[in-house]
Length: 426
Ligand code: PA5
Image (cartoon, rainbow, N blue to C red; front, top):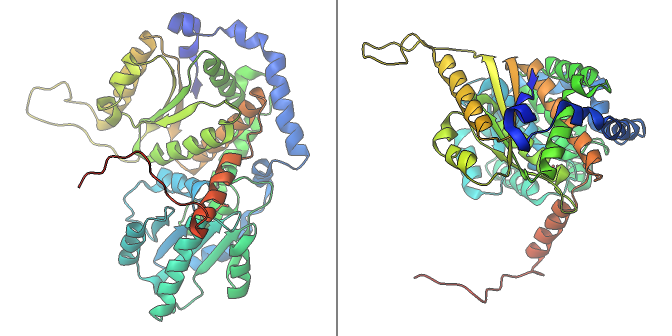
């Protein structure tokens, strides 16, 4: 369910918009939707084409993964955030399932040390994922692990590297070393790649039901075919965020009330920021976890600058639940933990709304591959629509590319650190 009551004038007063106001923008939203369709027909939107791809190609890597006890995924940004979000969305954060998974994104030496301590490399399937094939953090983590294996003469029973790339040095390495390889299509951008080989190959090996994930995405695609904005949640939420952005709501705050959606929030954070943060446009996405962050952030959200639109995410059914029992006199008696977290969401929503802060709510019947597929694809589409409403290209990332060039320049020594103003504390 997508509920947008709390962005309407009769709920939040002058900050709000009206049903008629949304309806009047029909031409504007239809053009945005038509532009996305045109881009798709021109072959520019690989994230939509991904819905029609045959998933059988992931069987061979899934078969290979049965030989291993651990999986390491090396990648950064769009090349890893989708798998992290889906894996946590299905399995949570405990890493007690088989196979155990470790993510290497940052070039943080302590992180790779901890990972090498936790796995047996001869029993580890290692994905190296980079669309460009040249991202330094990803290559560095790969080189360190590869050298560690060679130096210590670690030889797995079956070849244990899988490369997922669109070119660059990683492509060359994969060919030379004879790695199993999946292609990242040119028209699939990193942050839109979760339903391509980038997400699906590793997720299949982590026993995620990728068929249901894609089925959910297809369902959302069907739902969003309509021009009727009141039946098209991706288009409606794009317009709501666009309108609120124009009214100074420069922060898009997402607050899931279930831990398993926290990484989904991190995935959304990249999608929204990197796609729309251009030419002076773009809301800053912020993620908070309900109810935990009510105790650290809510004061600011309620009483700080009026610069936010909030999105609540909730699920109706948790995988496990506990009744709260005690002999002490307490309001909690005869309630379940799930009822507590659901009431906390409702309480926060009500108080935020009374303050006139616009908010929308997405409710999932339960969190599984199908609903997660719907949710992720819906947000990809929403981002594409919002790019069109803002008249910007949501699919490039010039500032990220520039930073990548600079990191090469620093490595080559053409940029050095110079400090003129600093306080040195000895
Ligand atoms: O969305 C994007 O384009 C970026 O976040 C990239 O995914 C990220 O920089 C990693 O790039 P690559 O896959 O080329 O290693």
